[in-house]
Image 1 (cartoon, rainbow, N blue to C red):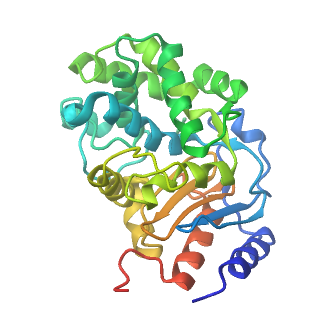
Image 2 (cartoon, rainbow, N blue to C red):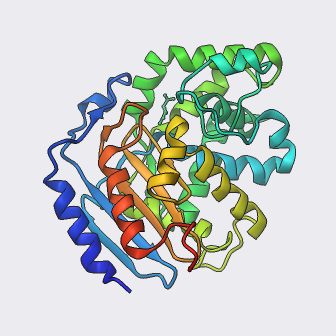
Length: 310
Ligand code: GLN
């Protein structure tokens, strides 16, 4: 087996020097301030060994990676009722697209595009104040990472709320169909804040461990979700985790993974590793360019693609 420690530091030094780094998201003004020079990687294997390199300890805005944790929270609270509100199909459209909502009577295609995640957040916020809704997501993330210091970046949350017209359009459109039941403003407020949660690669890889381990946190032994649910969340990450580049990501990397426009990606090699990468420059579809390249090199060398026969 390849030397994982050497590989992780090799990947980091190669990608830290890369010149083609993609474009940092600028539609959320606060994210535009982040330097494209960052690169971080954290890999935690099934035996608990952690390999980190580059800016693995620096917190960044997890953005849409939060959609995984929000889904876990909504499923824990409402069970399969979640699937009455949101589908399980790849969208083939941009993460913030509205067109499919009109074609499919306000029902979003999956929980990992903005519309689907807003519908999931509405379920989390049901019967609670926005503060309680957000705290339930934060509490889950802190429990999964074993780190009570994780919090949101208030400047990013504010910046997104001040400019989130498209998300407001999606939420209002879904409210008209009853996909969202609660007050639109309250749901959006939780959504903007969950996207603004700041974590390092190390914290994010720790938070993903239960998905590599059949739903069980390998440190505490606690069942976070059932094995069946873990398998299903991984299936959705593989098919929907990179928006309209999900097929390309499965083709190149072959791992369940969820990206965010902050440049983070959480990837799961079931039974083998939980991996977080961060580089703020994005592809045109809004996925970290160097983060994807890092995962490609890692999955290829380690033979971690879920499509490998061994
Ligand atoms: N907060 C971002 C938005 O709603 C999340 C999008 C993303 O990370 N792809 O636009």
